[in-house]
Image (cartoon, rainbow, N blue to C red; front, side, top):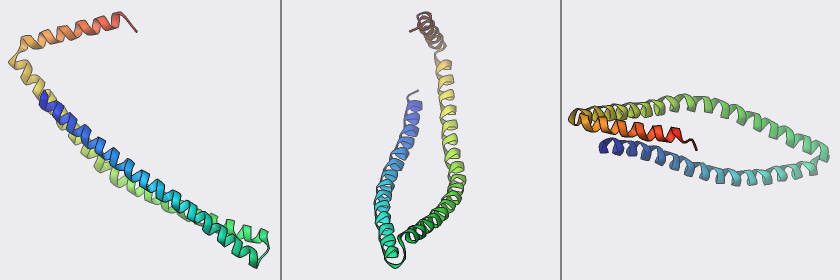
Length: 143
């Protein structure tokens, strides 16, 4: 049973380290995105001010808005296509890896439990009875 807990702990540690790693990467991307957003704001303001010197202010604002809409549309198309491709590539491999590890862990726990019951059947019966009593007492007095 100790080996099953060690294996379960190993799987949990792998998942936890993956989550921590992705959180760290996401925070770095968020900071970089914030800096990029501020710099893009200054670039947009500079572009508008430059256009406002050459043409009327309403036409400069309209030109700036058109360029931003065009860039936003292109980024949206790129992000949509990339997300579909990344989801298709990663979901199968990650799902397959985790399901394979879960199946191995389940098989190991079942084998370990059957071996323990075969070694000491009386202990298994007493444990089952004790667990049944505990569950029965817990259900009798609902919280």
